Length: 459
Image 1 (tube, rainbow, N blue to C red):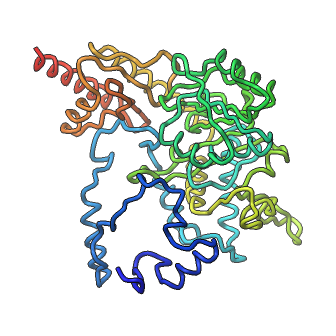
Image 2 (cartoon, one colour):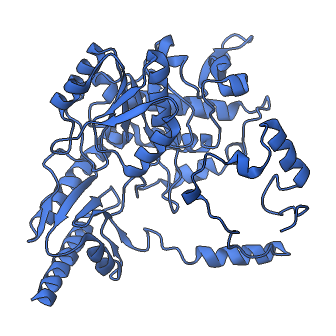
Image 3 (cartoon, rainbow, N blue to C red):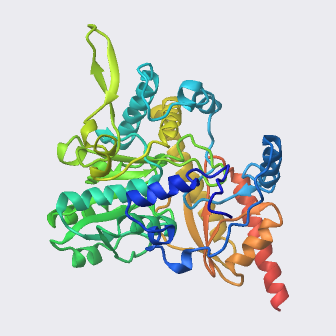
């Protein structure tokens, strides 16, 4: 590749543009710009990609060939979760978000763009009701960023650096949160007991340098934290902020964290009307009480209801816009983008369709189906539950006589994805409203047969 090459698919590859970007950050070269990226994370070779194709139809054919290798959870019986979930999405959700005024809207606000503002205001209102919170932001990129931002807010508010994580956190989320906050915060893990927080362990580590206590409920393993009120009381006594990372799918029946003492509630809305789509449509939410101390630390946009010069008519627009990176640019407390706003509209449509009764019915179904799956699988010789905590949607099972990876390989050949491998003999299993009792029975029979076969081969 020569210095004058301009790639047709990659922006900012023109030499003059690249040089202008380097000059703006006072870097002598691209290598210097990426100096803080460890060598082991660098590719150290050219990307293995085909040459640029001359025509659009050629590129479309090439991409279709790649996509044809994928298999969806509609084609296979899936018990995969770990952050991206196969919940049913009503057809009307897709119909609404495909409307051009939503699908094509972006950050530049033309005066006629009030439809998007109102849609996002309605989303915020519905989420606030579900979470029993007062203020909910326009979505961030994903739940990982939302939780990281919630912890960063706590650090700015308290002027402290330590964060105590008292739950089992999804490893990918833990990695991203640590990366996002590493310049500001130091995250320490308080090991769990029986799947939930060790309250005595937390109290022993609390001090006047703790910015936040970080709770994940449901946790990585699907355990619901039942001691949140006691955790919040202990954290508040030490002057720390309680930041909860959660999935809102169960709050039609579960008590919301805000009612149990949480100060900042964060998470992902993928479960609420967003498809899996090979890794997920993801968007994050941050929810706080109606307290200026918290609201003014939120870097995300907020849309509110505003009166107009015409009596009886109302409009929708930004609330406290001056605190955002859109207004402050590089002087902002945090940078926040706009790519996930469409998913907020999707979730707004989903919640409006479900209503309180629908969310309650869904929550009860998930709790019942999870317990049924735990019961059926734990009856298999060689299978036991990972803990005895209350679980929503996900849980772990311990396997004896067969490795988790081998079980996955065996069942995958039968069109079943039995779960996510956690360790050599532990599997994370997920059930949703799209999982029937007969699906669970089929999984149990397949696991039992695989264990029996393995024992026979070993004999």
